[in-house]
Image (cartoon, rainbow, N blue to C red):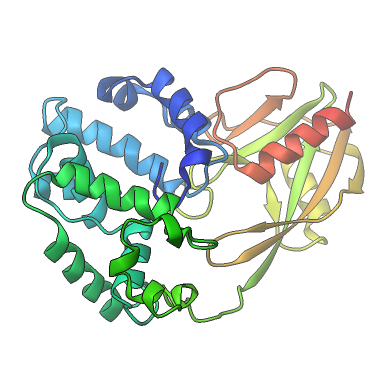
Length: 314
């Protein structure tokens, strides 16, 4: 959960998740929808799918015991070099270097490492520093300390250099250029995408949801049917419902920013008064009851729209 998400945001999700899945076996046995339900709102949903798959692999390949060998840990879905090092050093005291965002920031400032850490040559230099500095003894304490240093004092903005125990060693502080490190990511405008989300409500006040493909944006989550063009709405209704009678209206546009593009969402509310027979695919389509909480993974914009719809239909 701490990959790409701050501690303060993670804590309530972590507590609920651990209550629902207190061990590897419980997580492995859980339904994907249930896992994504407890992850809903955290974003980067591939992390949840990887975690779920890792639990299954641990049950199948390691007799339900989390592996203690570095390469076996690296082989689990979603666990890279730094995460594997963090798990094994913090949990077992093994000697492994780490390089999360906080550590990168500390090393960039102390050693005045030039360039954006996302570039391969800069990352290579930082890994070399991290491995050199990681002590053979007390590695657990060192790795926790350097992460905490970056999170609490050597912050991205408004760093508290006066209280930093490494101030006398920090090249950026000694030369009064702390804000110049780490190097910024080269500016690049985010591509803009657009989608029409159909909020189809039947006579019972239920909303049609569809399950997204397992890979890609919001993979495995439940969302609204989507269309690329406004002209396709009528054809979509005719093909999905036999001779439907309906009222339709546009809701306010909203934006959702992903790491690599910005999505413009145009919600269209469709109130079905009368429909012909429609057979739903229970695995990929459901009528969602707004008045009853359900354990389904929902992306943040979908959650927000469902809440707005619930208020609108009261």
